[in-house]
Amino acid sequence: MEQAESPASRRMKRGTSTTLALSMLLASLGTSIANIALPTLAEAFLAPFHHVQWVVIAYLAALTVSVVFVGRLGDIHGLRRMHLAGLALFAVSSLLCGLAPNLWLLVGARALQGVGAAFLMTLSMALMRETASEARIGRAMGMLGTVSALGTALGPSLGGVLVTAAGWRGIFLIQVPMAVFALLLAFASLPRDAGKARVRTASVLTMPSHDLQLNLLLNLLVAAVMMTTLVVGPFYLGFGLGLKEALVGLVMSIGPAISIASGVPSGRIVDAWGARRVLAIGLAMLATGSFLLSILPNTLGVAGYVLAIIVLTPGYQLFQAANNTVVLADVSQGQRGTVSGMLSLSRNIGLILGASAMSAVFAFAVGTGDFGQASRMAIAGGMRLTFLLAGGLMLVAFWIAVRHSTATASRQVDSG
Image (cartoon, rainbow, N blue to C red; front, side, top):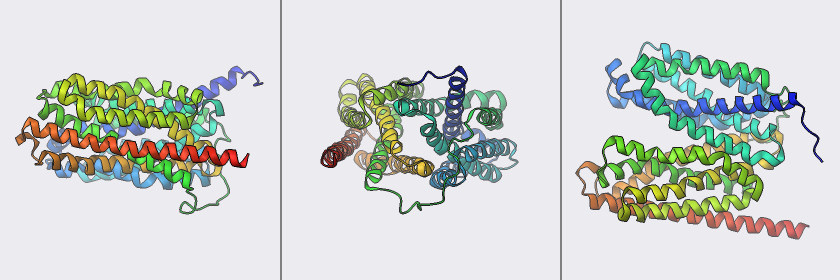
């Protein structure tokens, strides 16, 4: 029978959860907030778009290449200590971004900010696993998923307001007090023994087990499909259905809104039903939603697109909460930072593949890269083929998950 928690212990746990949620919010906000300012930056620095876009690329590239390394640093030197260092780095680099006198110093500062974001994103997940009770791992991961979706969705709208009110520097300077507040909160609330330094054993290259490799592959495939909706969706809605830009933005905001609303409930479902079962359910919903995206929008228009997204997006949150729980539940304390980094890396690679490979599939199916010159029928055909392929990928992922779960259960019975 569990002992009742003291009020001080409950306050400490709330403070820890708030700190880690705010850290994840900062990392995801940094991913999306700068996009809206690219035209303003082009004017301010008299630079072409292919130069200005490095403000976004530098952040994402630095984050992607750093996640496993910073996770390993957390395992060696302590998750708490490295998380505090990451918050300090994020605050300083945000200030440097806001004060940058030219474009290339801004790009360099954004790369530094991306490294800071890698600390926040990776170590928040590892620390959440470290501090959450066994019965609440799922909802803890679900909360991080909700906050990540919130930051990504909030970025463009908050960025637009700040650029209008304070210029492009405002989108970076606003992150300084947020990061400082998170740093102070982390210093006060993160338990001193949370993720303390471990013995320097097990190299990154020799650590991944077969089980971990499969879960990382699933993470990559799902991220690729979700990025496909974000990249292909606007082109289909605009050129295929003929929607105005404002309406395209409104329809595209439905997915993030559902993601925000379904994150915590998904975590609760994981805790109640078991992570492996929910992981399979999430993949089944992702496959169903992808196939619906290949059919319904071409028959029901916007309503069909929205119905498919209503199926797809909760499936994504169920998968994320379950997959993160499965991966981190059985990882030793000395490897949680590294494995969290691997999760982030596989997700980021999936996002890149979704944005590149699946976009290429869409362009191939349409028959041209100039979508403005393509017929609505060609755009509809591109949408159909792209999401038939996405649905096929999710069916493969579902088969892998079910087969692996069955094999794992069989091994447990044999060993028992």
